[in-house]
Image (cartoon, rainbow, N blue to C red; front, side, top):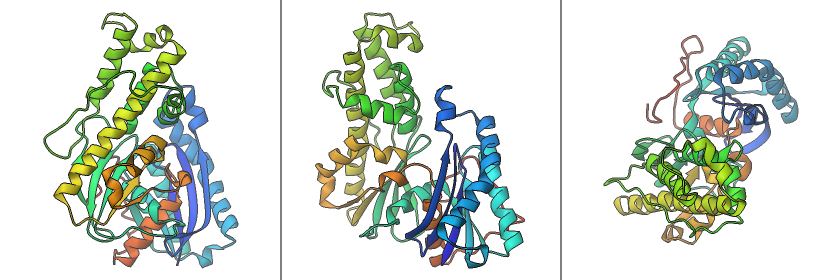
Length: 348
């Protein structure tokens, strides 16, 4: 089965052709990260306009790279939630039009589900069920229990900031460029992760809270620079030496990763039947997280991380998720009735 998949939930315009859920025939991504680096974040209106300009050329390139015609496509898949309203609209309208014109079944796919299924792409081994999935990105931090394909139960979520959002905000405090995750990881290589002790906000259940960690970094920087707490965060970077920035980056990164892994270990106690642990989303590319996981008690289970090129937003993961939806008996979406949802849970 060949699936043409489309992803446009944020600032990447992407299309791919996936064969049987795991084999990538093509994977084209046009990123807007260079556009938004100057702004320190994504501007939704500009992102939507960029999608509008690039989506058809990206789809044509994906078909050309796969050496397939529209007649050899069996289904079309598209991200319909969650994401930026305008960005989602461009992707779903394009997918709906193609499904109608080409007479192909259409599958609307949840973005977080796609990130989880990135672990099935071009992999020599695949996760065993039941499994735990840690979905970590700029917009989400969730632990999900999956007893089988296309079955999800959210057992832990963030009560405030997502971990990726926290990385971005700490990067701004340290005067680092957007996106914050790669900037912090690069700088942390020369830092001391024990230089600045930071708290591990703990909640009685499996939920996360990262707003306190962000504030703790802010207060620690102000204290290290001997500045009052009224000092605006955007002024602090000028008072830090390069080594202080590196030490703060390393200390924050280590603490954030430890918090994620501690919650996973707690989740294992409540779900001892789990055979595999799957990491998903942009933050799963973090090398410190991967190293810590592989040397932690979690390593007693089978750990799965997506290949680095599949951790960010891409269409290949959308095609993989759609394939396993089809295999699980999910019926196609009526292209005339497909709606978008800026925010919705994966179980909806």
